[in-house]
Image 1 (cartoon, rainbow, N blue to C red):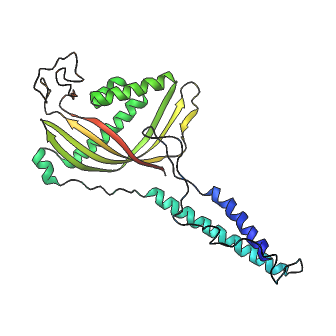
Image 2: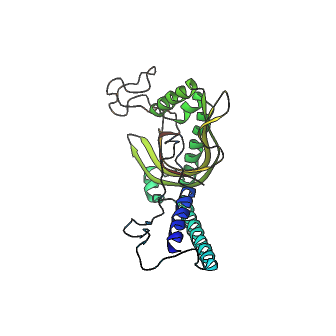
Image 3: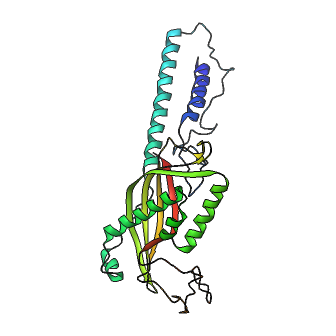
Length: 286
């Protein structure tokens, strides 16, 4: 009977493992294709840890005359054990998927005051989320005009190129129901009259790509919401610039992307924060 129970255990494990969920890996800022793999944090062991080979040459033999009731009870207990193990692994993986690996803290208010005493940290964090959300909405709606007011020239050029690619493919990136879960001002500094602020941002949203002609989802999953974490950078000019902040040369208003003398990238926003960088550092299904 033991050899049959062993074989049955192997079949149950082989059946249950594919049912264990994997982490998500989707979103425009990274790959929509799942690249994760199941890792319960423990090992089921190698062939040296388990002895599954039947012992046909042992001194004991088992025939159909074995107690059928005992075999039924043993089989039932085995099934309950495997089911319990499966549920435990699912709970562990779900718990892992909901926890962030990051523990960013707000920068000291004293540091902020030295940069600009008029800055309210909570207002600035809200502005960071608002800018992020407006950019995602503009991106989704192919609103290049609005997008340009929210980003630096360098970032806008990259986004504009990506949007052109989506248009050629007749695709649209849907990002809706965006909710703020956490935001931290993790760094701020001032250089050549330009204030740079870095934030940790955690949001939940639906994020997928559709074919505009058929409305069919071609990338991502419209039925599963994602939790996405970012590091985003905002920059602000205290005033409109007429000279290059690096070399002091007069700026040609017909060419606002870089200084024509020293090739320094120019921030052309007027008197407010815009996004200069956005990096996705983690995402998962919720």
